[in-house]
Length: 170
Image (cartoon, rainbow, N blue to C red):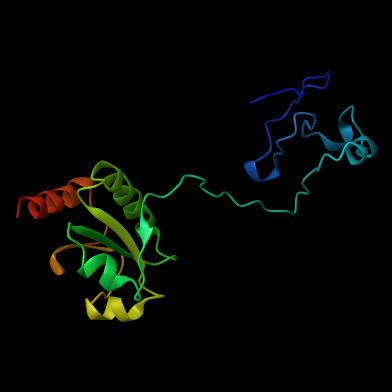
């Protein structure tokens, strides 16, 4: 995709990869070949990313799920008056991220009828061992302090919704 910096120096090559782009409208990507030299860029406080620098992409969307820990397990899960959905996850687990998005949607749809939480299985290993969690992701559904159902692995949203509907019908 050819672009221009808005002045008179059209880019003849594709835009650089995401990690080298800048949000400044004055930097066109041609660095020294551009009509602006480095002295102008340094005076105007525009930061030009170096090719060796790697930027990290971070999702800025607010998660809908609250975090539960071993300390708060009894209060939020076992003593809850409404059904509770808990996702056991690990930060290194790729499928957990996919499940997390699905549970996040479910938390929004069932707000007020089901409480949804996440528990980091590596950090709170006592709770994970108590419920015999051998692999992640695992999603468990509790009602009145008792485990009703569990879904192991990455499943479509319908599996989780069906388990919630069964719990709400009881």
